Amino acid sequence: MTIDLRSDTVTKPGAAMRQAMASADVGDDVLDGDPTVARLQERVAELLGKERALFFPTGTMANQAALWLLGDRGTEVLLDAEAHIAHWELAGAAALAGLQLRPVRGDGLVMDAEALRRTIRQPSPNAPRASLVCLENTHNGAGGVVTSLPELRAISEVAREHGLPVHMDGARLWNASVATGTSLAEFAACADTVMVSFSKGLGAPVGAALAGDSAAMTDAWVIRKRFGGGMRQSGILAAGALYGLENNLTRLAEDHEHARLLADRVEGAGGARVVPPDTNILMVDLAHGIAAAEVVARMSERGVKISAWSPTRLRAVTHLDVGRTDAETAAQALAELLAEMA
Image (cartoon, rainbow, N blue to C red; front, top):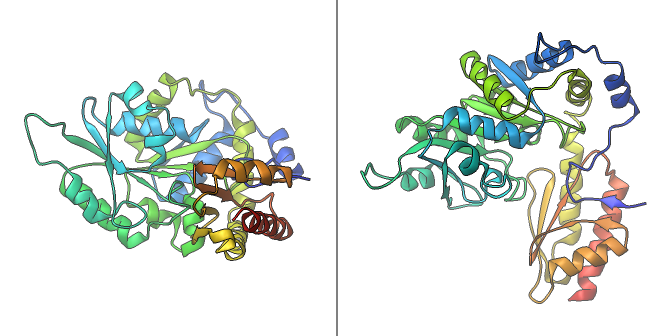
């Protein structure tokens, strides 16, 4: 049996989720609405404290819709230098919305309010103006790091001072809430629009949502349609997301515990250093002379799949298909291999 720690997107829907999807009440969501999609959208809006939410096929599409919605063509978007929107969405901001991305490097692992403040350009006839700030919480590239509520509020305040709307890539906002005890609505209040994903920690096979005020979501509906995101009997997919919300949200704490277990067992093995995980993503920095690609290949031979985040950094992500025994087995295998390779 293989233990797959490459991402929390590798989960497969269990029997109960599949049954919920098979029995979902459906309709044509483009023509007159799908009842299960409507239930999901209402639930997400309620959890995030927003007026309305829209169901999207993917988080990337929802993020790109928010950029189109809130950004102005020929301007720039300020966001963390390692943001998902910057590195993993195929330059969609430029290709689709005509937006330039301006990276912000914080003093810590992620963007902070003071870094944002010093990165915003002074008005100039020769430089692009900013039209949008994007947040990411938790932050994938930094290792599932949570930006605290006070810091998010500070970032949002800097954006407001400059008249800039804020979008939050909250693909794993569920993890941030469970890890800190801060409500989803409190986090979401720091942004005009928020994207959340159902296909990561919640274990659904497909889907994300974008939430904001009613007027913004009316415009976002048009953008989603323009992007090709109008779905018909999509309640079959929404039912999986609803099941995840109802049954898999609170259990995210287990994933966080398993990531800490991995971190504790791997720290120092073969000179490796871990980024202490806030949530379910573990980054492991390898000792000099050890290549991440080689570690990945040799771990696969031992029945454990992990990712090479860079030539010298590994990434492992815990999820609902990885139990404690799996985490212990994977941790032992990785620690032993790193010690052998040192």
